[in-house]
Figure 1 (spheres, rainbow, N blue to C red):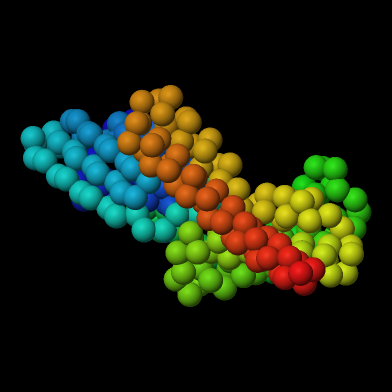
Figure 2: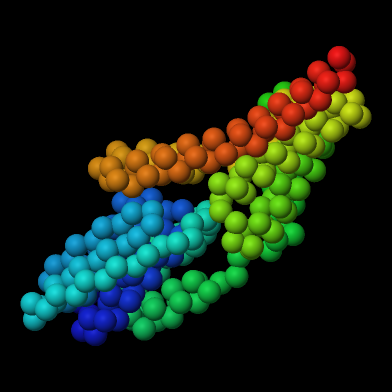
Length: 261
């Protein structure tokens, strides 16, 4: 179904859909495909889209041969696949003619201002996942309980730091440090649990699994710039976590050596 609508509304709809998807962990090829499908349901003559993890570029040519080009900078990135699904659903309804452009824009605007999940819930889920990861990797029940406590503590610290505008590199560095501090305290001081199982379980929610998956899929689909960028981002996250853990463990080993000299 072809809609007669204002060109600026089309651009607003396309940009907003792409922005929400990029900010919530969608692959760049999926973002470009969604934006192009939206334009295919309008009277746009041609469209060129280019998405990277940090920005969106859209250029359209109307039936009157007028050109419009828009750039949108994406500064925040998180993981919320529910929002990605909802954007896909809204765009699908629009393309099929079930909703108008006004309704699509309203739905996307409401989705964009939707508050993040409850902090208490996120902390609880992070703790549970960390505890079960520790058990899955061969840890004892004691390791699982300590890892759950540590995972919840890391998530709480991440929420506080991110709200203060701290970079994700420092947030992951802090998370790795917290995991090592808690593990060393319980295992080395209280003689409870295993350091390795507690650390591995508690840092699992921090690992960039989705970023690596998106990087591979972007590369396979030919988006080499986005694929390379996401791989570098994933490596930086891994390095920051490992650095946090390594610094604390090194300090602990030095202290042990100092105590025994």
